[in-house]
Image (cartoon, rainbow, N blue to C red; front, top):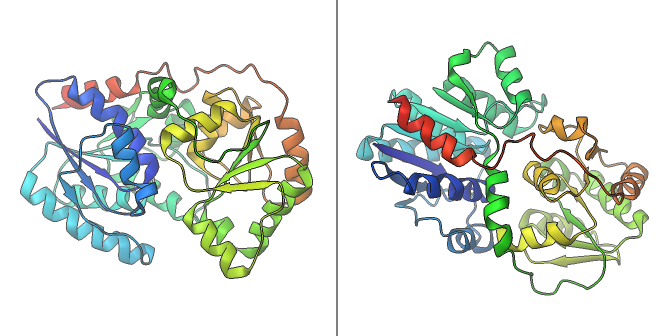
Length: 350
């Protein structure tokens, strides 16, 4: 059996590391990894392959930048050529990026079965390109590998046949358990208690008022902050001439193992990242989400994640609440064996 795996962005590298390791345990499966190049900064791409021991991609398409339509179209065309050459039994995609949609569309048009890891997530905000990507991918995929009961329910509500849905848990929980002991400290992290903050979504970085609201909320909280500064955010801050408040300590983007170290040692997390919301939960940390909605509704329901938008007063108040300890059930995303369940599903389906 041959599986073509499509990756292009940092969260997908981590997820692919889990499944690639499980695939390597099965002797009769070959995996061909295709890196679209959607994240091309070495700190956002190559370092993850190195530190997570992911097999080097057999194809590197080098397609990053440009508008959503242009990027997706170029990726679709290039992935189609890979599929013509490789003739896989399955195409495996992760999450909700342009790379995910391009891969799913290319395979579906060639009648190659698509397996979607992290299927069924919904923010119910169709202004987000990620929402469009995940909905379309789910509806062309043959196998929908979901991380949670709410994802199952979302698919059922959209009329997806039950036999196409398989709840395997969350591969990011697998990754946290496996790589946690290998976590390492980033350079230039101040001593003492700190909040960990990540900001990268276009809805925040491309809107000066939203970005200013987040920074003002962090300043009002009066806590020391470690901010791995995403290239998008750094560029936007420079463009609008917005300075970081005094207690915010910006560092360069970090690798996955460094991020695990920060998450394990911070007092709480403030983020607009979907993945980091879950990682906070995996590390028994409360999360303040500076968005207007989340795909990870379970975390809100059990009281470990608070959605606050970008109002400074709400952010500051939520940070104070987030400093309280939690004792939450850590099993809502499975038991840490999602990778093996995914491989079992792929190998038994054909």
